[in-house]
Amino acid sequence: MEGHPVSGEEAFVLSRADDGVVHLTLRSLTRPGRGVWRLAFPAVLVAQRWYRWRYRRALRS
Image 1 (cartoon, rainbow, N blue to C red):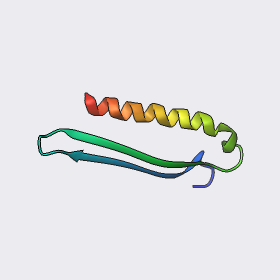
Image 2: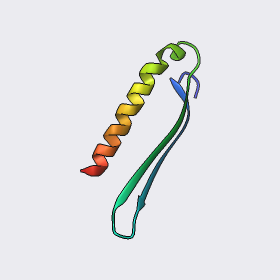
Image 3: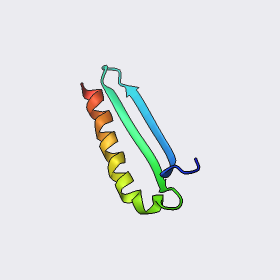
């Protein structure tokens, strides 16, 4: 998307084993957006990791 801080793909895959255990797989391919977003890209990656941690925490509770 034009003006977005990153471009790429994300996948959120939930699977349940036969014993009822649920597994979450998070995958992302991220590139910096254009222009000034290139400078902010390291901070965007930190934010992305923080959100992943929150998704995992939400699944556990």
